[in-house]
Image (tube, helix red, strand yellow):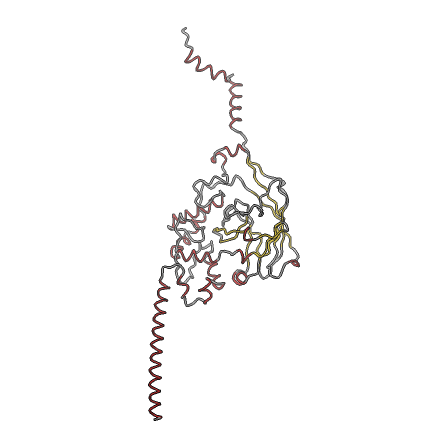
Length: 396
């Protein structure tokens, strides 16, 4: 009886193992089908859910700090966003998605902002701005967004403006400290659109490991245009007013450097049939995929050095002067990286002025004076000519 029972138990065990293998095979087969669908699906970004080399947190929340180095290479202006070391080629949509991953998040960057001793929401002041230098958060720029709340600060200086102070405490977050060891501050005026040729002044790099609390005293020197300048044609004055965007597809407020970015995008498209993802997105041009980016890399000098005679200087410009000093770090809270203080000085105390040397009235007066002096002509002479030639024809 005991041997028979053992034999029966063995047979049951074998059947059970076979059933388990069948179930496992069936499960693997179903997973393989699902995985194949996810990898080859046209649904945007779905293949990242089943990639073998990704941590589970990356599949759920997107690309984590371990991918930051790759993303940084894909955003380099010097290579037009092309990375020859990238293993798997990416589509246009995937490159745009990767760019979005490195757009700074306001809550990650800014902890507390204080305007004239009053705490304000930093994320109601700073808005995303896309340039070919990368993605940034911009305050008081015509090219991103201005605060909707009229009570929030605007850094516009005039002769009646009092001094003001803005204090920023950057936030200590795991995302920034692990993936981005530093960030740059670029100081521009409202009109400027930063690009690799200018329109920016990187005067501070904040290091997460060794931050230095800093204070700046800032003054602005604007350019004033009289009514005569505005009445002249663009060809005569050789500069553009902020409203003179004309055929611009990117700018709502004209700026020389922004005009040059548009020219580079047009050149990129003319050369490669698409525009690299490092440039601001637009419906006018198609975004290049990974393979097409190599064309931009091979022609980067042609694209970067493009010339456009229609990109004229700004009529309304603001020169920014600043002096900085280090601060004691006693008042920096533990949750903040450092303290950044900006003192907007009263003013401006000086300004540039653009005016017409000779207006149309000046020209008329000058011509009339010359005719009167050398010819003896006057307004009466103008009337006499048709009178004696056509109305009075007395016979000899």
